[in-house]
Length: 310
Length: 311
Image 1 (spheres, each protein chain N blue to C red):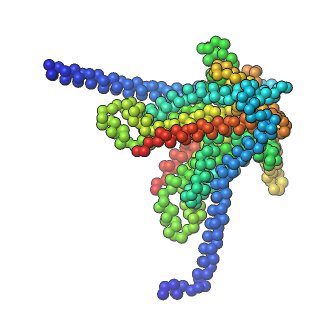
Image 2: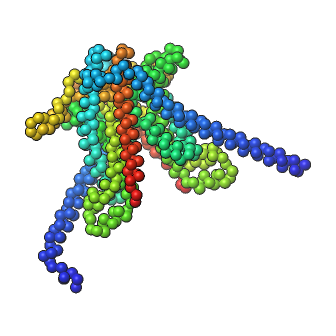
Image 3: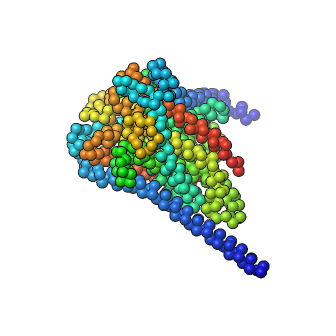
């Protein structure tokens, strides 16, 4: 037999080498798993910290006041803790941003996916994505010192800090997110659907709007949700350009603070660990997190609703 | 009579088709217009920063500390702080991100547990950056007692860019053909040997690209490090990482308080004095220049590696 030809002395060290290599494999695998668990740990830690640090806040302020009071003045001598003004500011800037990003992003996505020549698309996509790579504080500069003075010429009496210019700039910032994800979704629509449409005599524009866009609707919805999450959580643009005074208004030409701007404002001062000001930013952060979560769940439900099976 | 109607119908049809073809052309023009106005904004932004900041863009600006006088204020503490934070971020995010990606692509069994990790990575990419700041404030600054330090800031930004590194690395690993793994397994290599000697070297281009993109995001992040408590007026440098005597390296700087480029810019921007806005523009031009440069390098690296590899 062939195995008998190899002496046991020769195979023994090999076997221990294999055992060593297999043992090393198991240790490495455990370490890699640990790295993967960092992501899980981060999520758990975010939820834990937000809840744990805002518990003392909700000991002092009732959840009812928090949700129904119309004033947010936690740093005043007579503090009021109604989150509504901050939520309103966040929603207004988000809405303005989406009014820019959704039409522009969708148009760009349709153009790049259905009309642009291959070379142009491959060159322009990375350049377009640079719009999303610009540091947000630089966009803040742009909103405060370029866009606002320009808008003031169009709208007399526009204050130096206003939600309109902040929202418009956030809109520009999230165009690449909306465009890129929508475009991926449109390109995933199989070619035979386009060919079927062309064979019926449809033009490119008809094919794009009546075949490709409906077919990619779930992906496009996901792109919009991504844009909303970005706009809701955007911090520096609003902190620089929209003002830091909480103001319960739905008028974008006024100045108002958002949830994120309030967190920045408090962080800039040096508040002691156990002060209510410190605790209030975690309560505000919790609301922000819940808002993002609600949009994402709604988006998830929407994408499932619109999912097309090819 | 019959022929006339047919002709009328044909004419009507032709008109219809022509109208739709014009619509096609109009859409191309609108699409290009929107696309190029978006890109134009980027150009305007950069030119405005450079033009406004021009009087400050000189060597003194880079080598001076912050000051109460706008024309004497510089970004020395800011760029040193940013460099040290990026060092910590890179040293943490790279190994953890790459390891997590390897686990998910090469090791993880297909079960609910792996699904949880994957969902987490996707969700973390969508968490607003200021939430990471609150996490860091509660966890790193107070629970771990790191204080308002470079270490806390670096760790925070590392967590922030982790999803970017993981996603980029996974994509690169997935692009390595099965045949390469199977050839190595056939020669008796263990899973780790296959990964270390074959899969990783082939996916290095993607890993590097993801890392650079991640760092370019981290370098401009302002909100999370404001939350930790970055100072905006610092007239000293962190302790030097290098020593003249043994062991030549020092880690005391990790505990030092800090400022960073975007924080410095934000501070200047939030002053009413237009003289300081000039400083903000100059700092912004440098910051934006660095971000664009890093993105350009990433695009180049991806291009080089794509060209070099022929399966």
